[in-house]
Image (cartoon, rainbow, N blue to C red; front, side, top):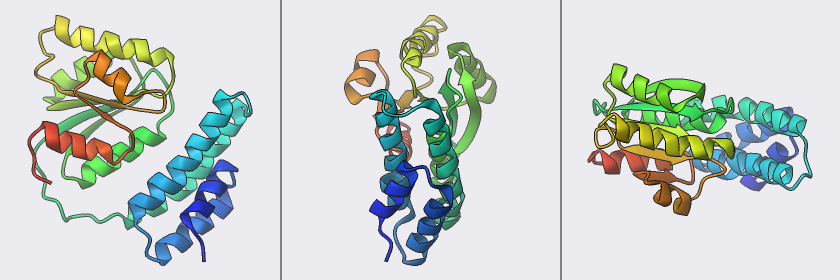
Length: 213
């Protein structure tokens, strides 16, 4: 019988086909898709990221880990319950700041959509101005930012400053998450919320926008 720890290991070892097989087995056994996602896939990705930070892995390992995760995620998304939460008419602008990495951001977007939110996905490699402009054009209720590498930390501060300068800071609550962020850092920056995991984005959006779960 497969375990979530097995999946984490396969993702950590960047083995796409074995990881996909374990994901299928876990879903067939009735494991919670969110648990498979967070404790299996995302934890495995974090393992690779930690090795890279410790200079025990190379960029190619990060790429392979992303490829491995992408073999599992569509299976998990298909297993997520849909249609149980009515649309709440709230719109969230979502994007990755500077970086091209999108796995975590995509997961947050999927969970927000399932949770009843309209998601305006900006994609990757966004600058602070892009978030402001998209929020204004789309009539957003919230901005969600993925920060996955150190240079983007400073740009997040620039984003909040830009929203202040344009007198829309109170109009757009801003939530943030990503591998290089922490609760302490987010609080110091003045973010309205921080999520350690993809599923936290839905809870934050509901809480901040006053939507019942």
